Image (tube, rainbow, N blue to C red):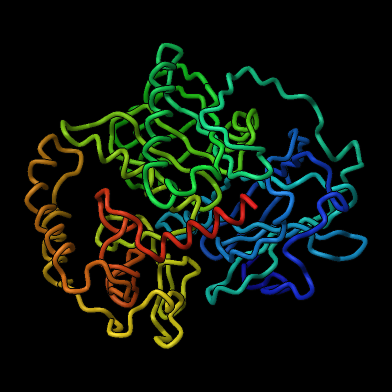
Length: 473
């Protein structure tokens, strides 16, 4: 079925819907996990229901039930059947939608991905609706089904074994009133568990020493779940290296050597369900530079340095990727090799809060952070920067002398970013979202742009704070 042929029931705004709903009127304090299969190819998708689970206590907000963040490529919307009222919604993105932009999908090859949505457990019948943005960023309904929580044949209530050790790494209050992060590991054998504990502690300290997470630390709880893999390390398909791991994480996702994701969604959700969580982080016990982050899905990060003196890059990856999965931030870089085609449409404003096509300078989405004297577009030494990037792109990232060859190029790039006229200012700097021309970022440098420990710019910082507010109040 063509995406454009789906019934276009559009609900961009929900009139007369208060963001603060009466939780007890519609829900009980438990989690419903709805699993489904997402199948299709370029321009085509279908969703088929798999299983629905009673997954224990609800850890999310009891107050902010209807999502007003407007983030993500998809939106799940829960309607109370009796009143046709939206009682819960969340935005999210998926592996499927990213895969649709790859050469494989362009070749009309079909693939299926397993996905999950977690909602508070409804008291009565609901309409479960999945919507997706079209190329103009407008949401359309693509799937809908009725779920009856009181039908014993529809809900799987079988107690799941939870043989995993759950530890509170950082606890600041009740899960309902905090952002709950669960950290799990892949490629850690039983004898690697001490390393996993140290890794989790280290990266958590890295996160909460970085603004704005540092200032908002008391709004978070962090949990670890110890899951044991048979092998140490994870798959590297491009090197024909295969590991038997608990969560199936792998490099070379969509043909990108450094992109780490897992397609074992059911396994991941079963493990993470042992702890209260809103957001998932996966630490991979491997040494190739890499990671990944998809909004409201999960973050991945490598945890073993691959070159002397370069361990700081792991810290960069952890926070950068969390910017994607938590804050809904887009990549601001544009010169690196990627496997996507047409991730962003020309002259269409992206939903990501830190990217803009700059179609309307007078109503720039981050206008309130601009100084009057800052021009739009904002000039910077882009051609000089790009010439260095072209040289760097020819280097083999997996070669043993990569960092040695990259060092002078990296230092020259950093010098440009630090000394350009509008460094430290908010503007509209051309080059963002994997696109060199016609897409703009808020600052010349940011944690979402450069491979460095530079801070988030004011626009990204505000976006992260908005998500923290939504989940912790």
